[in-house]
Picture: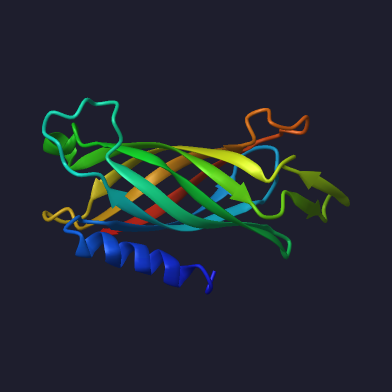
Length: 178
């Protein structure tokens, strides 16, 4: 992670220098199926697309560039993610909350994990994966600079490989916009 973090910070700085309001997200999640006790931790920069008041709802708000890590029992695999993210603020007048949805093309550096409890190897089947997410969050301040969200994520190779168990995660994320 120490090698990729400077790149994430550089991207955030370049986005901020260009007049946008980038957001840095970090979070941790755990599996709820298939890969028992697998942890997904990540840090990402959300690079805003130029605001357009006439933007159709289906156009993304930001591009997410991230680094993640899947780990269990001392085994780990790093991953890089890139994809669009949509934020729907239509609930903000009621509860100061939002919905997030996104999909990322993901490169998993090591798709195989050893499961010590089952004494066998388990595989995601491919280095190329797709990560989808759906989140529900709250702005923690009036300036909407800090937010916290609950997320559901799914990582799968989308059938690119015969082996495609996929994994579902639930977790929390802290977000900071500057």
